[in-house]
Each structure stands twice: as structure tokens, then as C-alpha cells.
Image (cartoon, rainbow, N blue to C red; front, side, top):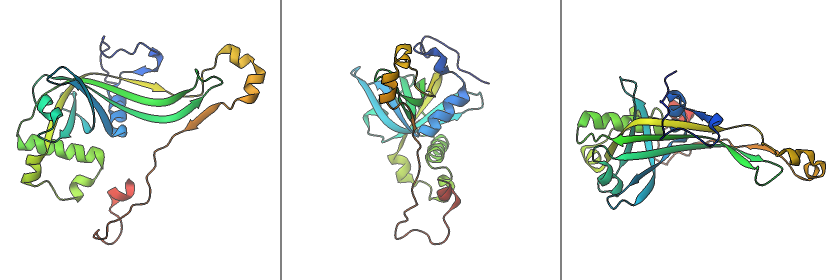
Length: 226
């Protein structure tokens, strides 16, 4: 399996047994989390962190490419529409609440991926921009690109794409029951009074709610699959 090389930048030091560096696992978590938190420093060297929709793809060389979309006049695009600006992006999925005998031992089950990379602007290359739009749309709502109208020239002009070459990444996963202190486990009175265990968290969708001008007939397959 293809993996990211461990470095000072991406090595997980706290609970290293929870770390993974496999590119497929990184991509799966980023794609499932949907919304990424993208961190960078602005022109004044002030830290910024923005929630953004992104698409993580693999090029012919096996490198991960992250596409983000923004407004052309936004601060993040003005900053990141330059070559070699370093960014970090994180996607996190909450899988459960972990309740231990102590508040200190209580935690959450989660899957989290952190990407590090550098910007590589695509400029106004229409082919690259169309590909980025399609990837972002498909990673957000699979099947939507071919079902809906394609962007107009005005929409192309009014939407910017940020391309990031990912050169480092890691995953951290916590799963399973609480990890209890041995003294707490030996305290039968404490155990008799405190509920312990895991409350799983699942993301579910509700019934589709069509507009009054929506197409008639059976749901398109990509809507039903959501």
C-alpha cells in the first residue's frame, strides 16, 4: 500500500499506535468528512483557518492533489492564488462518545486526517478549471455533475479554484471502549454508580424534500443514493 513517508511534519507523537500514513486511508477520511478546515498565514503573517469544500484526487504520478473552491475576491484566494504557499487541511469524522469511569478518561472515537502541501495555481486554464469543478461537485454530491446544468462563463469567472499539491499527510484514529485507570477498575463502588461504554455516532440523511419546480417522477439514482 502506498504511504506517506514519516517526517517531523506529519509524524504522530501522541498515541503513535493510533497513527496511519496510508494514502488510501487519508483519502477516504478526507472524502467522507466533506468539509475541510484549511489553515494558512495571510499577507500580514496572521494565522487563518477557513472551513472549505474540497476534493482530493490522485494524478498520474500517484500524487494527491487537493482542489478547493473560493470566490475570486476572497482573502483566501488572493493569498493562495500564488505558487508555493504552505497550507494545512484537516478533515475529522466523529464516530462516538466514549464514557469512562472518570471524566479524565472520557473521550471520543474519531477518524482525522491532516494534509500538508503547497499551492500550485491553475490560473485561467479552462480545461483544468472544468476538471476541478467536476471533481469538487462529484466529491460533494456524487453523480451531480452529469445530472445538472454545467457552469456558465459568468459562473466560471465568479468562482476561483485553489490547487494544492499534497506532500505530507497522516491519519489518527481512536476506536473502541474507554481506557480505564487500574485503580478505578478496582473500585467496585465507583463502577456501580457510573455508566460506562460507547455511544456510537452515525451520520444519516432524511427524506428528500423537492422544490415545487423539481422534476417529476422517480428520484434520480444519485439523489436516492444520498
